Image 1 (cartoon, rainbow, N blue to C red):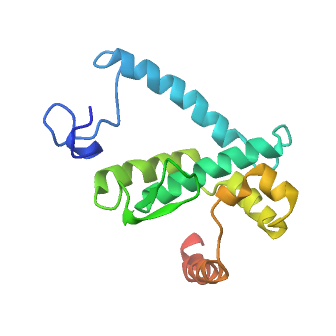
Image 2: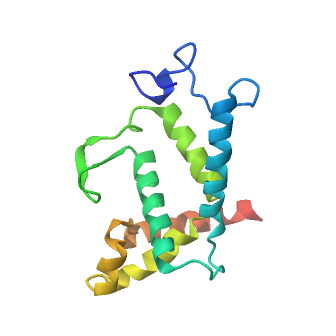
Length: 163
């Protein structure tokens, strides 16, 4: 369904991104989507209070969330070296339809926040330890002090809306 110019340049008329499929119109795509939905529910299931998942499962979800977030923001994620970011722009840098679709996917998986990512980010304090390297936490995005302060200011500014 994707044309040579990216995800938003495919489909039957070259201008649509197929986000919704039905069993009648696209039975094979519907079956694939049902399988994907089950897998994505597993990503959602690993909440902060659920103790049934191992630390490695939490890190795997956090790494996926990091790669998805970087893709949404238009960064190029090198397929050769997992943690290298190239100087050029990524697929979402100029493809707003794909960016919106991926943001919708992010918000469907984690409507409030990705608890796995937050939990993995708390382990960044152990950077340099054998646990940190063996778990692959260097592939999980970090939140800088400035970003935390900006998020706090934003939360305070939006607090009246939540009331």
